[in-house]
Length: 304
Image (cartoon, rainbow, N blue to C red; front, side):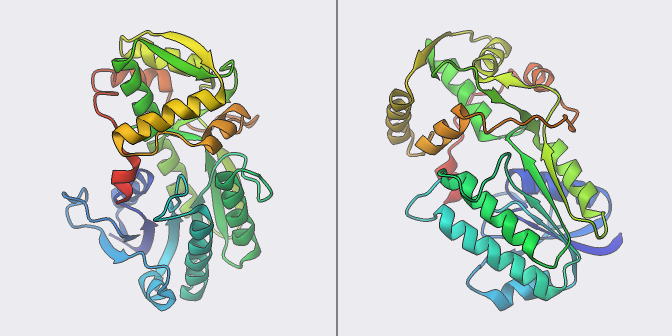
C-alpha cells in the first residue's frame, strides 16, 4: 500500500468513482468528501467517507489533513431551489481554501471546455471563476477540461439513446452542425491520476477523445448503434427547450436547460486542441448498444 493519502470529492459519483478506482488500483489510500450514501458501496469499504459540508471550514481541513492530492469533481449542472451555480462557486472556493490550510500538495480540478468568467452562461462563467481562483492560490494544480463524458451511466448520451428508443423522430437544435467532443470517463480518470503524481508545475489541459462529431452526427451514431435510426428534423432553440420542459415535468427531472442549448449551439463543447484520450465513442457505442438508453438517467434523483 502506498503511504500517501488522496482525497476525491464525490467518489460515489461518476467521474469521482473512476478516479478512486484508478487510485486504489495503484495501492493508494483513498478517502472521499461526499454527501452521498450509496445503497451498495462500490469500493467494499476501502474508501473512507467524510461529510462534504462547505459551511464547516475546520471540518474540511480535518478531512484533508495529511492528504497529498485533492481531486475535485464537485459541481452542479443547473440552478434549482436546492443548489445554484453561484453557491457551487463559493463552495469550491471554500474547498480550495481548506486544501491550502491542510497542506495539500496538489489539486486536480475537473473543469469544462471553454470556461469564461465573463460568460453570460452561468455554467461556463462559474467554471471560469473557479479556475481563476485556483490559479491565484498557492497550491500547485492541474485543471482538466472535458466537454461531455460517456461511459457507465453518464447522463447525456444515455438519455439521447433513451429518447431514440421511444420516439419515431428526434429534434435537433438549429442545423446541428456545431461540434461536440466526448471523452470516456475512465480516460479522464487516468489523466487525473497521472496529473496527481506531478510535482510543482501547474497545468491546464483540454481533455478530448479521438473522435469529434457534429451534434447531428452524434445523434445518428447513437441511433445507428442501438438499432433506432430515426428521422432527424431541425427545431428552434425555444421549441427544443419547451419540449425538454414537458419531458422534465413527466420525468421529474431537468432534461435540458436554456443555457445548455446555448452553449451547445455556440460550439463550446469543442476546441482546436489535440486529442489526448484513446477511447473511441463509436467503439464504445458498439460494445454497449444492448443496454444503452434502456433506462432514463434522472439527474435530480441522483442529486437528492
